[in-house]
Length: 106
Image (tube, rainbow, N blue to C red; front, side, top):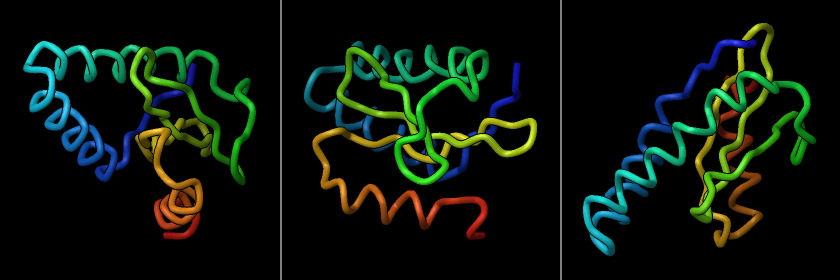
């Protein structure tokens, strides 16, 4: 099983989404959203390398039942979680954001 590294920007993504969920659905909805994200992390680490690459070297899983995708890439012995993205957002913006956050471009 690979170790997980979460980019600092992803914590901002989570905070923004959790704040929105708290505003529209209350604290319980916000907590369930964060729990849905966290529940995917062991799954990503355990099955790293088996997910289909969606864009360049990035793969994704969904934070079900919420309409968010968690984008990540494999880097050596690590899974680098790069982006939490609402699936209704513009796909062109997605590619731009992934490229900007790509650790290989740093």
